[in-house]
Image 1 (cartoon, rainbow, N blue to C red):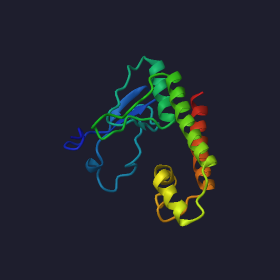
Image 2 (image 1 turned 90 degrees about the horizontal axis):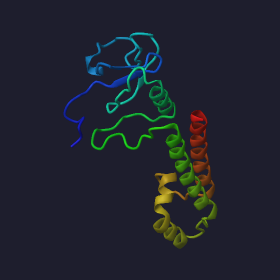
Image 3 (image 1 turned 180 degrees about the vertical axis):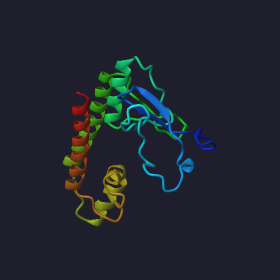
Image 4 (image 1 turned 120 degrees about the vertical axis):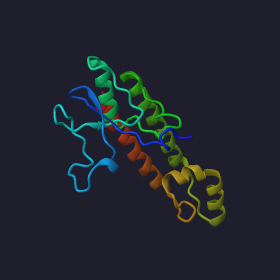
Length: 175
């Protein structure tokens, strides 16, 4: 059973400038027509706060190193959102582990590119059916319509090339 399914909890926001966290009222509590419904500003400094998710536990205010790490996590899109069943998943607890995490993702993406480089595209119906049965998981990651459309090697390479670039951008933000 999802922890957050039966009761509504206030979302947790963090201000990296003040190193403080706040819980924000729910959208059902906000009056209709009120401005800045989706934006959360820090009550202390007035800067925008980061929506960190319901599973977020803030470090102490004077622990600057942990706050900087949480800020770097947020900058690459890692937050503490989940449905409450099993938590937010793996969250690296240091800069080195964060880099290692993204390097592992990049390695898997490059392996997928290798598949698309070496794949022989089907030329007839029989080869296409064999390709669908053998490589459906690879084809479905590129196109949700893979059963009706022919997915070319170039489409696969282009897709994974974009993914690798996104991970490299995140790695550059961290380093």
